[in-house]
Length: 325
Image 1: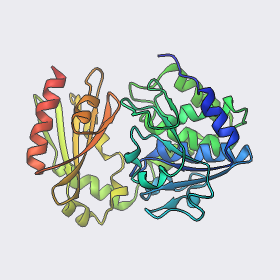
Image 2: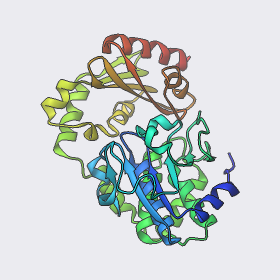
Image 3: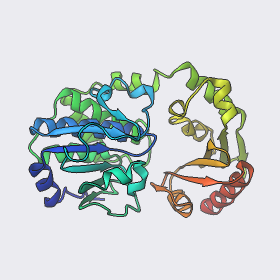
């Protein structure tokens, strides 16, 4: 799929605005964080003010990205909001409520940057490229369109975004263009071995113990083609873990030979769960996530639902079995 260029209205808004508030989705991941921090640096190089604000804490593995210590976290807005800002920039959020901050952000004109299917185009300016494997790739193209040279710190954030959303360049969304962008980011100063160490070799003890808890719940279905796992409150308690320690654990069951689809249900509260779906090839889990009010990509999607974990698991297995054909 060919790249969708940044629209003229977006470029004009970024050039005309002076101060921007940037946010990503709840429970931020590598693409959300790397893209937001990278774009904030691009805007500052244009002489603009840029503040990243996320509702939730980031996973500790991303703490080494330049600027992560300046992220404002929580439901209360940073100083000077909204009167001191010109635009809210929402990154990787198909709908405004995915930010968890919609009532605040909607007080300003919204710029919507995303690569997910089903984006609601809720911004005054919208740039959605569903062919891009990561928003970080789009931010790199945006920097070029704005005439901003990418420095080493910006390149590192964007490389982190691209690497994590392609699963270390293993997922089906990885394209020839992805490798071109990754190569350019390395030339600009990103160090692949450093980023890989942060993401894959700097897990907390709690994360590893939580992985053990999750694997105890592993069940295989449909001749071993479907794997289901759960992360319940008592598992987090035994592991001494928090929600940030659960980042990317869903990818482990997909490494089992013969497994084509995975469903993880992570408890958010009594009877409330976040579902994470992963698949291979032509197995479309975005459609399943959308049926629960969520969304994402063909091979990686998520949603929130209420009910008993056993009932939700059974329903997901049935839906995944239909998707497998």
